[in-house]
Amino acid sequence: MTPPTEEATDSGLSVVATTSMIADLAHRVGGEHVTVTGLMGPGVDPHDYQPSTSDVIKMGEADVVIYNGLSLEERFVEVFDSLSERGVLSIVVAEGISERDYRNPEEDDDLEYDPHIWFSVPHWQEGTQHVADQLSEKDPENASAYQQNAKEYIEDLEELDAYIRERIEEVPEQSRYLVTAHDAFQYFGAEYGFEVVGLQGLNTQTEAGTGDISRLADFLVEKEIRAVFVESSVSPRNIEALIEAAGSRGHEVTNAGELYSDALGSAEENAETYIKMYTSNIDTIVDALKD
Image (cartoon, rainbow, N blue to C red; front, side, top):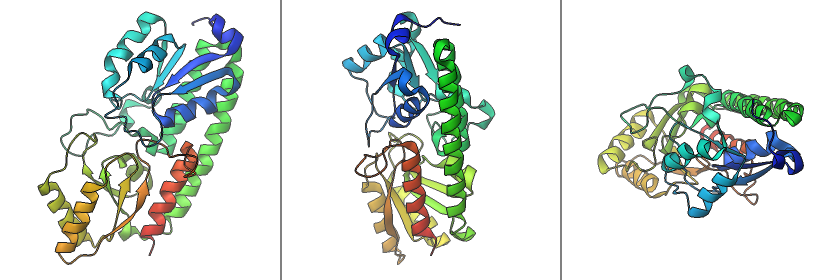
């Protein structure tokens, strides 16, 4: 067990979180005993995010760095590898989830596992407990606070999970298709009974070609799907091309709204926390598909 640092004892742990979802988790679990610096703001795509020099300095000077893992932050690999040499604790949220629960890519992809674990609320609860356990080991003096904070957050996530399941009941089973810009929602689909189709692969750097757009347009016609969704961290141009391709087949499809996939939204959008983000997503999805 690592003893608490002087900084941890005097002014709380210095925590750097990569994505906005993880920064929110760190705030909830760490509470007053941590100072959290998030590297990626609203609408930032973690697949493509290149850490700046200041990001690298912040991570190297932190007590703890928390990141998702499963190659989500693929441009951080060298930085992550160097953290232990600097005495920085790395907490990988995905390590709180059993490997057997990781989803494999639906098709050939450059990622071994689907990294979008936060779209299963039960997985996010497991990740929350893992973060609490790791912070407790790093800073045992405040372990009881981390564990209590995690318990309260997990209870809030339980309420979110119940809300999601309740709202989904409004969507007829034959209408439970979620078509999005990139393949970020497979954990959502598996957890809540949707067939999910992303125009791009798991990684937003995988470009969709005209063949991909054509095949998905045919799928929309076949399944009589009339609503598709854009994402806050992905360009809408491919979804717009998909809508146009479906229209050329005499099938009207609407852009049913924006979903938050790889990043939270802003306070102005009322999507600045994980719970608010997910609530916004499920309301957008259900309201578009329930009729």
